[in-house]
Image (cartoon, rainbow, N blue to C red; front, side, top):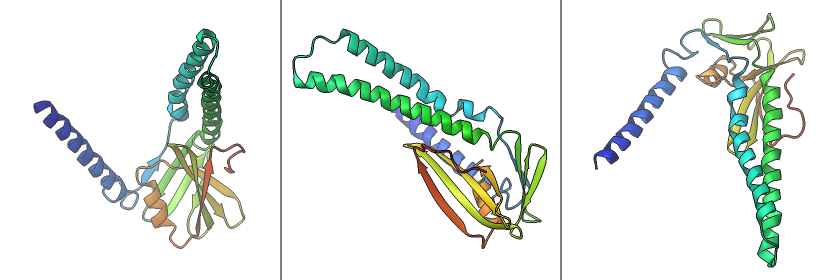
Length: 207
């Protein structure tokens, strides 16, 4: 009974803590709606994302497939043949997902490398500092915003493209921590178009 109580209490505490942190980052003192906020990720951020979790699973599946195909007795029934066909198919699927994840994360890594995103409430502006070049984005020079969701089943990535009056695009990865709320507040009236890329096989529209 005590263990159950502690588990329930711990989960409740974590939920309340997460809710308070979320509220603080979106509407409270840490929100870009109330004070300037700077967003940045380390350049190796994507090296520790989804790919690093899918890789060991893929290796285990490949190893299991090898054991199965080398030690399975001579097939004599229909389900034997079905199983023999299923294992290589499962292996191929995991290898495909791993390769797509790795390729996608390498693309997204280009828009967080040496990048700082600064949101300033008094001026309602966003400054993107990348490769020693500062790009100031406001409602005066942004013509449209694209919101791109990249999905691999339960793995999701989100980034934005700010299109200026000349048609040039500035990509920004979703840093979370209130950034989407800041974008919504700073760029009211700017049309937003949503795009979804599921298991993309072609290069993502970034630049």
